[in-house]
Image (cartoon, rainbow, N blue to C red; front, top):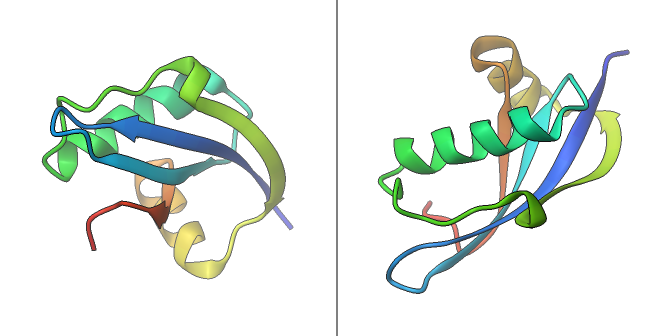
Length: 87
């Protein structure tokens, strides 16, 4: 069983939209979590969204569900969308 680390993350787009999501990775590394959050936001068209270390914080460690495990294995991180994220 591989434990993954979950970073509770909030980002604010220029339009004012708030997106709440978890960044999940195998290393407990806040700098990487923040980097991956920004990378994912850019990939969905929100490169201008603001996310800071204060808004990307370690939450807990757990075994990642299979869908997140596939994302982590292929790109180094997984994103679990919570509130305000595009479908």
